[in-house]
Structures are given as structure tokens and as C-alpha cells.
Image 1: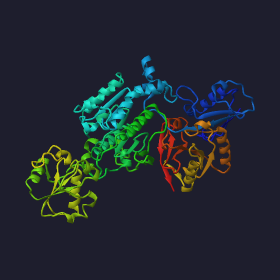
Image 2: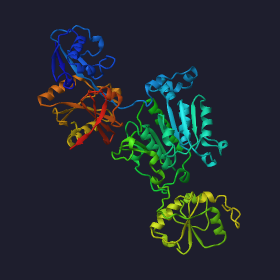
Image 3: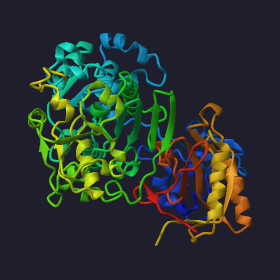
Length: 485
Length: 141
């Protein structure tokens, strides 16, 4: 009997296009040819002795690959074709291995609780078991962390670890919906833990009241399937992304500012990392954080919900993932668009040999420009009390307010010159270099940028920063004005 | 020593146009070249034989089409070096299904495609010895 070997499989059969085999059925043919060419055996059959997916057997134009046809007697003149099955598809696999899914079981109460997931064909029991088996780390229990943590808990994620070092403040309640007014002054992780317990007591909630840094990050994220970045600053974002690359953990990134939000998935399936998208942060102070720039209340709900949705899709292994993409949402004008993020072949972190990156040795504060370096001229500053004293004593002093108009509307600072940062260099002549000049903003960070900008522009007069910004001035009462703030 | 697969610009353009033309469905093609030259000389677009409902996320080539194609290629002195397919709206990374169906020694090129562009093209091959898949360098000329 003649057996035709496809060119794609010939290298396993001595490069022969045709073999003459003395056999009466397909089983006999496969036995004979794999015995004659022993190397081909492990190519044709898998470890369990099953024919590999990529091999097809045709007789007289008909597909006879299925084992049930292997014992059919073949005519002497029939030609048997050994052909390749060429197939494939996009990647939609769960980040939770099958063994861990299989180790999970449900009781009746859980079946009832997760009915709405079990009804979905793409999730079902298998998907829900993956969700229960998942271990997810959420960095930040603030605006974005609020919806993320609550939806993960509601969806039944088995283990949730939350890292945050802050206490709840009254100004957080506007958009950090996991906390309530009763939680003010409590650690955010403690408040988040209570909310999760009220959702589902069987969830393992690991609270870590710590600030993430280059020294502790690897230990914190080790052993988790997924990290969700809900932080609000560049130092934390780069530390988290770099650590995810080192540990091979996918990262769901989210960020909000005023009315705009961004969400994306990094470090998934060999894809780009945060540094591929943003090789370096913007100059310190240029982009205010959410706490400084503000954000409309439901925006973190929108972005955080998408982060939680991406996390669940990664866990279940379904749908399209924001992998190599950044979804940008403008909630003010209701526009959204997808931006492609390419993997940077020269990326300092994800393109190099993973073992070479030593996160502990990277100075993230310096990288993000939030560290005062020795060769920089230190910036002198006034505490709120010192500035109040200067104003009270009528010492000549110029105060420059670099805040945006809407910020000034919330809290007016009298007798100031208003100059936005972008206009400082060109309007430097409005300042008198003979008189001390104090720069103020909301938190005392953009004012440092203002001073550095003027220094670069060649302004030589004495400049001071209001430490802690107008936020810190709130409690100062001037002798003549009994609390004009 | 194998130093990656060479793809000429016009061949890569043909692959990209095929991927864009079939978007949002997966496209597939047979890659032809000369034995031992590690260069793709011709591409042969083939039908995606997957079920209609799966064509956005899967592809399949009819084995008999491969049979026909290799016969015609031989007449021109060419042989099948590997296969090309697209990943609409997904990255050009190897999926579990892609890997399962890879024949050791063959070259597999995957292109990520969206409605407007082909942001990523990557190549893979499966090892003869341990059956593991690895990425190969695509050299462009």
C-alpha cells in the first residue's frame, strides 16, 4: 500500500514523499512507519499514545483521522495521505492553571450566590472555579481600588490582598466608595476589609498597611496571579510594573485625572510593560496627582470597573484583553479611543534579561524626579506659620500663586500675583528681585517646579516655597482677619 | 546555523494586506521557499476553513488544500516552509492552540491586525528535540 507523506512531515520520515507499507488498515500503517522511522514516533503520537492534533489521515479524499476508522480494511490500491492539520487561534487562556481550578469545589450556597456567572456560557462552573482559585493583589485602596476591590469580592475572587498605607480622610469619601464617613481616620485597608467581609465572609482578605517601595515590592507581590495598579503616583506605578516584569505577573493598570481615565494590561503573554508605553514619567510637579488635580466622582468607578472586568477576563480566560493597548476614556465629552502600545525592543526592563534587573538597586524617587539631589540648589521654604508671621508683620514680600483658576476659586489667597507655571519665564520681569518672593500652590509641589523654572530662566531674586501649600495654610488664623481662610 | 527567517518587504506587505483584507476574521496562508535557504519567496493565501462563528478567533486550513499546494509548489522547485495567520485585535503571541498544532521544524508567522494597521508580526518554531515552541527572528530586507 502506498502512503503519501506531506512535505511538511517528511523530515521525520527520511525525507520520503511516499512509503510502501505492507499493512491492511490505518493502525497497521502507523505502527509500521513509526517503527521503521523511530524518530517519527514521538512526533506522530503524544505521551499518552494519542495521535497529535497536527496530523490528519485521508483515504480516497475522506478524513479518516478519528481512531474509530483505524481498523477499517483498506483496498490494496488505495492511497493513504498523511497530511498536516494547520490550525490555531488567538490566545484566550486563563492565567489560573487547570490544576488549581480542579482543586476548587463549591457548596450549594456558592452555586446560588454565583448563579449569574454560572449562567454565562463563557464562565460557567469552570470559570467560577478559576475565579475562586485566583489570588489577586490590589495596590491602593483609594478611588480606583474602591470599585476594583468590591467587584473582585462580589465576583468571588478567593484571595484578595490590598496594600495601602493611608488613613481615610473626609475628602476621600467623594470618590472612594469603599469607605464611609464613619471610617474617617481609620486605615484604608481596615475599612476595605470590613466592606469585603460584608460582601462575602469566605473571601480571604489580606490587609497590608504598608507603603510600597523598591525593597518590599517583590516580597509583597510574590505568589499572586495578577496585580491591579490602583495607585496615584509615578513612583509606585514604576515600582509595581518593574516588579511584575521580574515576577512574570500580568498587570492591570488604571489612572484617572479630572475627567479622563486610562486603563490597560501590561506584561501579559510577553507583551509590553508600563515602561514600553511610558519610558519615563513627566517632570515632577508638572502633572498634578488626583489629590491635587481633582477628579469627577464617578470617573474612578468607570475606570476601576473596567480594571476589575479585565482582571476577571484574564482569570477566566475569555474575551479580548487590553493587552498591548491603552483605553482612554474622556468622561466629559463621552469619547473613548484605543491606543496601541508596542513592545519596546530596547526597553530597560522587559527587553533585558530578567535576572539582570535588581529592583532593590533602582532609585525610583530619583527616576521620577521627586528626590532632591545634592548638586541641585536646595529650595528654601516657609512653613505656614512663618509665612503668616511675615504677612502679619508687614515685611515686604511678593506672593506668587501658581494654582489653576478653579483651585483659586475654592480657596482665595489675598494680595497675590497670579502667574500660571507656563507663563513664569516670560513674565519674570513682573517680580522684583530685591524683595523676597514666595510661591504657593495646593500641596507645595508645583511651586517647587515654579521656582526651578524661574531659576532656569535666569531669575536671580530670593525665592521661597510655601511648604505643604495652601492645604497646610487652612488652619492658620491671621491676627487681623480672624480666619479669612 | 539557523539565524531567523528572511522576509522581503514586498512579501511582508502581501501578508499584511491579506490580514487587513480579511479583518475582522483570521486569515491564513502557506509560506513557500527553497529548502535550506530560510527565505520566504512566495505566499499562497488559503481559505480559513474554521466554522463561520469561530473565524474571528480561529483558523484552520483544509489538509487537502495543503496537499494540493505542496504538489504545485514542487513543480516550481519550491516547498512549504511554514504557515502564516493573523490575530485580529490580539497580539501576535503564540496561543496554546497555535502551539498545539505546530509541526516541529516548520515556521509560523503571526501578525496582529486591527481595522487600520498591522502593529506586530512575529515568528515561531517548534523544537524537534523537546517539542517546545520558541520565537525566531524575522529578518527583513
